[in-house]
Image (cartoon, rainbow, N blue to C red):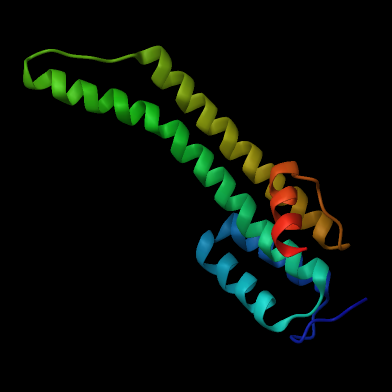
Length: 138
């Protein structure tokens, strides 16, 4: 079992990055990933650190793009309300809310799975993220 400079196993640090990304958000995950990228030599750990932050970023991007639709509807409603009217598309807003909730559940389950697999230096394939990491990290 390989050890990090901190004296803990590589798998445990990888799992910690995934779990901190899940429970604490970006700040702790990015700090831990920065530490790994600057000071650790293990290639699996380095890729896992980048993967953890990348998975978080991809899901945040998807949720932000989906939320643009209700924001646009709200904008139109605000403009129409200036003239005394009202504009609301309940079906579309509810559909987007359901999609965002589903993405949040998928992200949590994926991060838990990645964290558990990381304890044994394993991973779960996330095709889009893995392709980008392999392209830019070699």
